[in-house]
Amino acid sequence: MQRKTLQPQPTSERRSGTDRRRIELERHGRPERRVRVEARKPEVTELILSDSEWQTLDPAPAKRKTR
Image (cartoon, rainbow, N blue to C red; front, side):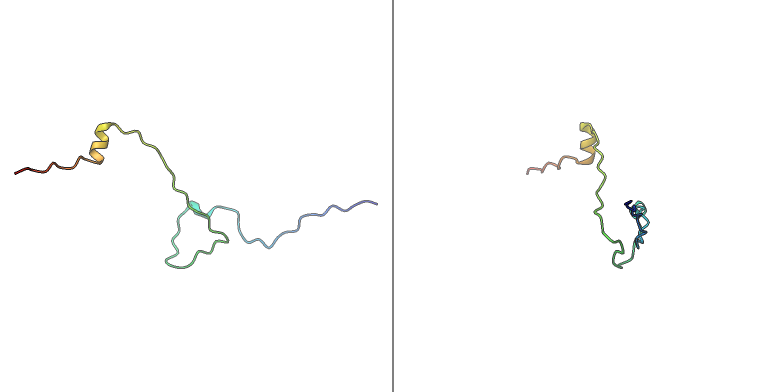
């Protein structure tokens, strides 16, 4: 007896499989329509700063004048 191999049936899946997060589209207060919302993880890039660059970003507090 020979077995029939089952062919995968087309599903009723409507998602295209492409990532919609590549372009940020605002929905103006309407709820998200994605089937499953995935967290948007921030991209982190480490910068190497010299001491003078740190001083420009965060200057030392001004000294108080004494009377």
